[in-house]
Length: 330
Image: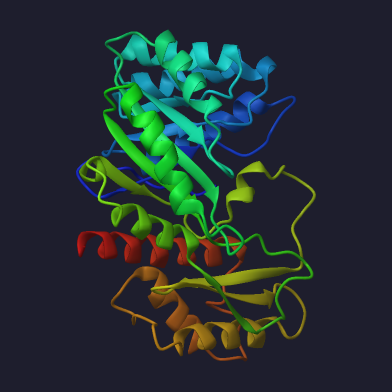
């Protein structure tokens, strides 16, 4: 999972996830490898670090790693939530108290707001030391085409949860890039999905609530929210996806990652993105530059066509650069 920095002085925030589902022998070594990646991304700005799929048996090892994160510079803050196990909650709160770094409270809203969550969040906050700063991470998860009421649900949740504490920061998170499956999208054909999370954010901003000045925008990048729950191993599909973000749409183009037509297919997909009316040009970001260079490369050479991680990196760079500029212009 690519890590994305949090800057409190800016208008964009993101919770970093420490790995995906990973259990069994060697999980400690795996998490330490992930921790090094997180540190490289958070050399200066503060951020939250989360391992939402850790099992109870892994909590002692995870607590040690979270302590290492927080103790390193106090820039990385542990995350817990009302639906987490008692052991995980205790570990995160103890780390936050020990190092004075604060704690992120991730409140999930996967569908309609459930008023019982308000009580659960209050009970969790009651366990925290009064001197521990708390950050609200209101996580709407996937905000796709079939969820037009996400903005109203976010407002209901904010109205209920914000009065429970003096939050140091408060962010609304969501993602609109869908999970691509074998039977979804035609190879080489450009597909567009509405940016539901972005529309949700504008609905929140237009609500006139008095707490709007304290809210920050959170983003999952170009990965689907469901990517966080994927188990490692087993290999990936023989195809990948090029992604691009426009004002109202998530643009995706599926490409083969093997075979004699691989190079031509990838360059064709990159050209279709480059030829979009809303393509922002090579000066917009390194991600857009990569897409342009890929589009204009020769079909006789695979150099510059990249692999799955290159496509993901280019997609995330162009996406996050664009989001930051949009937020700064409001």
